[in-house]
Length: 178
Image (cartoon, rainbow, N blue to C red; front, side):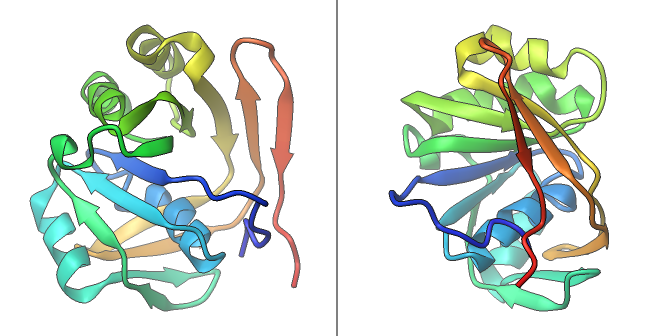
């Protein structure tokens, strides 16, 4: 998987999704972090998906194996207010503004968001809501699909590139072979 090495400090992470994204690629990233030993809280506006995760666990199958993880998921951002250092932001373009508002509620005052969205204008919308200094943008060559509520299928494994908006430093994250 990826994210195999834990940092020297613990970061409280939340994954914000709407539409299908937490249910597919968001699940890939969030559960990859869980598999590496990080604590990740999931947020989605789809109550059926959240309920399935909380009842049965979050299953991820596909190119990286088949595992079910016991994680916490919420559908109300107020339940997670001011709780996270980092939000992994996965929404479709038409959910960006609402998702950004949820991220603003969930993030601590000095927290920041990482977006791996496809589409034009998403980073700018996140920057308008959160402030550009709190947003990291990127591109992912991973893909996934929703099999059922609480079950994502990882369909393609690829590189992930991140770029902090304010000082334009590139950070490359690649799969670490074990």
